[in-house]
Length: 106
Image (cartoon, rainbow, N blue to C red; front, side, top):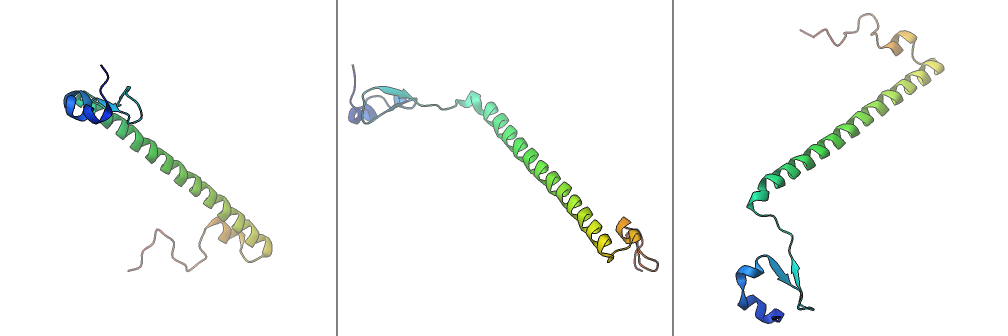
């Protein structure tokens, strides 16, 4: 026996916890919900989603780092071609009297 949508809420609240009535139809439509047994699956999916997001961010960081290295190298070559940078400076060796990164100031 089909129950109208207005009477359905009063007729069987336990049954409606799993079924949902559509206002334009008397047909029942199952609601996709997870039971308590699915909590483990929820946390697994949530962890996988987070891991996937972290992997995507790490790939973006790696790409940006690679692009930065390429542009710095192109910049060094351009400055060397213009004569504004010596080959020693382009290699990254500091000129005499300049502190290197390994040295510290007292």
